Amino acid sequence: MAWALGANSNSPPFAPAIGANAISTMRAAFVIGILAALGAVTQGGAISETVGTELIRGVSISSPAATAGLLTAAAFMAFGVYSGYPVPAAFATTGAMVGVGLSLGGDPAFETYRRLGQFWILVPPVSGGIAYATATLLRRDDIPETIGVPVLAAVVSAIVANIQLGVIPSPPGADQNSIAGFVSMLADLPALSGVGPVRVLVTIAFAVLGFVAIRRRTQESVEKGIRTFLLVLGSIVAFSSGGSQVGLATGPLQALFVDELGLPVIVLLSIGAVGILAGAWMGAPRLLQATSREYAQLGARRSIAALVPGFVIAQTAIALGIPISFNNIIISGVIGGGLAAGSAGVSRRKIGVTVVFWLLTLSTSVVVGYGVYAAFSAVPGIQ
Image (cartoon, rainbow, N blue to C red; front, side, top):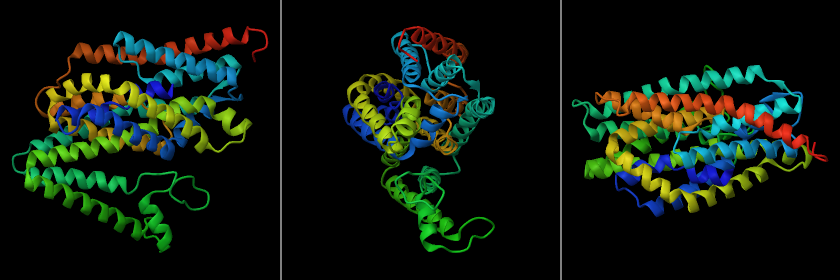
């Protein structure tokens, strides 16, 4: 499952950079594998816990149940790859694990479903809105690109200073911490209105560094500056993608590794990271070549507009422990960026087909997951 995620779900972040000739396909696949694997190890814990323990109440996911869930989700992903239809891994895995849990005799976790549903429904308008605002900023005649692009870099850098990472020492009772939070913890100054002044200063420092670095590049050459920012943005989104996607593979095994075997979560995440790394190196180049042609038609600026919301929403989802579909985010971002140019760039039929397959994936994966585990449990010796 992790191999399939590495081959398919982590490719979109670098496709725009390839389309803009900022990096070669093979080099992009190599970098994607490393960044996505790092993101998986450092940020994948929250998503893994949600998928593994919070979708069903009253039962623990057994090894046969985890097998049934992963087999169902992987089958849906394989169908999407070979048929060409957009099958989101997050929807397939979530539905499969709900179906398996119900087949085990568990109770529905309606509060979790409500939280996931609200977030998923908000993704298209929020992603499209951020992309629209970003594309509008880049298209304004009264804001030169030597200012507009560095401003976006400053915003992204400020967010980077505050993303949660499992490798950074955290205060008691917290599992993760950010760079800004860690520096604030070391300074140990009293907070003002609930916000630490050191955290604010570190965030501003990151924003200034991002602004200055990209501004110098755009002053040398606007196109070089844009390609550089596109490459950096793709790297950050690829890292975020690994953190948000690995839990879809490791979540079903959470109960086995953590509860039964007593192993640290980092061991499970590392196994998932190895699978993502292998999938990116072995399977991503072909998909990158295909998707980069689509992004080349969009252009570097609209590609930036599509990736900015991808980063923001992915990090928000990781912080909240919500599994997400990058297809959902990227497609919504492409539409929002297209609207800023006067055309969505995606046909209504394509949008309709995509939404229908998202809904079908979520609903049918529940039924299939239920049936697969029911068939497993009918075999003597399997519980």
